[in-house]
Image (cartoon, rainbow, N blue to C red; front, side, top):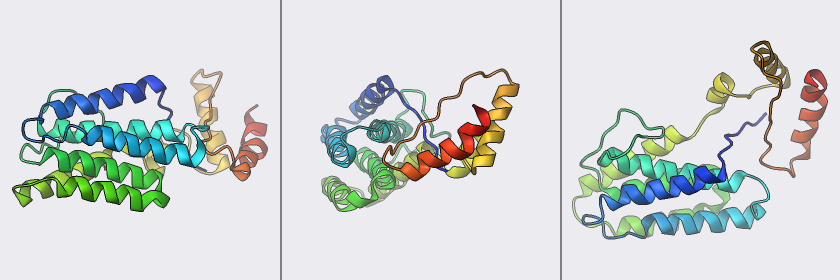
Amino acid sequence: MRGSIALPMSMLAMSCCLAESSLETHREESPQGSVIVEWNQLAYKIAFAEDQFRTFKGQRALAMMHLAQHDALNSITRRFEPYAAQGRRGSEAEPTAAAAQAARQVLIAQYPAAQSEIDALLAQQLASVAGDMRRKNLGIDLGRAAATAIGRDADDLRRTGLGGTPDQIVDRIGRFAELGASRVYLQVLDLDDLDHLAVLSDRVLTQVG
């Protein structure tokens, strides 16, 4: 069973602003002020082409991407509290490479079918980075690390949310009820996945309704 993180539209707007603000710190060193905007435009295009934002997947993907970019840039010059990336600092890393790689890693995980478009933008932005190859590679590594910290794997969802088999989901909801919860919201990202909805209806909701 798949799980998801629900991020409101206010979080999407805030995450984009955070990424832009983080890039401001590096504008003298990295003149490509459009790095964040270009990734936002591409992510929007890919998300809209898939489902016209009928599900929450697109908003979630854009928010995760911008938060990963923010954390990558913030790890170079700390100005804000990190969202997910903790402990790693990369003051020598090249900021454009860090922001571009962070965006690429998040988008590829969400939209693997769009890899050619995603990798084309990454290649374009990395090619614009001149100077010390060591700093560029440090930026790439930092971007990957920031993107990894933003994502949640299945084990994490089982520990902190609702993920697993139908019986595991029912058991988890039961524990919430024991703690006093009277209502639980379940989000399905792909409303065309009728098999997923059927499992929820037949094997989960019938036991907790």
